[in-house]
Length: 201
Image (cartoon, rainbow, N blue to C red; front, side):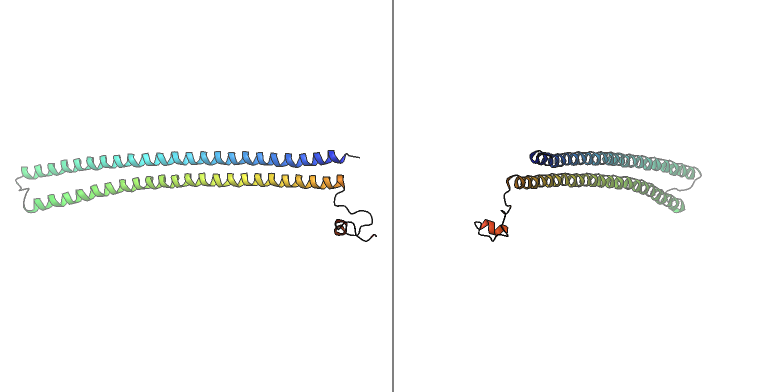
């Protein structure tokens, strides 16, 4: 037959070991969740930085192309004015002046359209960056929430193991000492507590 003290110690040790290993596993799971979410957040932040860099590059490229277009338009307009002047037309009055004004209006519209196209591209990159940054913050919050839940589950498991161990100690203590067991001939435990004035069986 097994020694009751040894059985109690083994039972308590098993409960405590189970609780401690569960807590350790929960901590490792929480750390892994934090590391994974941080990795995802950093990757998203890298993407956001790239998108912001692209937005700035597109902005510079757009400004350069608008400037180049304006130079080409001025060269074409100057060439047209020179040809009209060489043919004897008055370029600052009459229909030649109207044509020049119309050409300038069209040139300005072309530049505005080019500028707007680049602004749309830039805005797209900025929106992408903002979305990536928002996702990065969400990844961190989600990882922390999962990690906290895992740690709480580990603590609850450890507390349950400690309570189980305490119950085992109490039960084994009762078995060893006979405490709270009615004496032979005592009908009710309450009678035994009343000083043994219980009725015998």
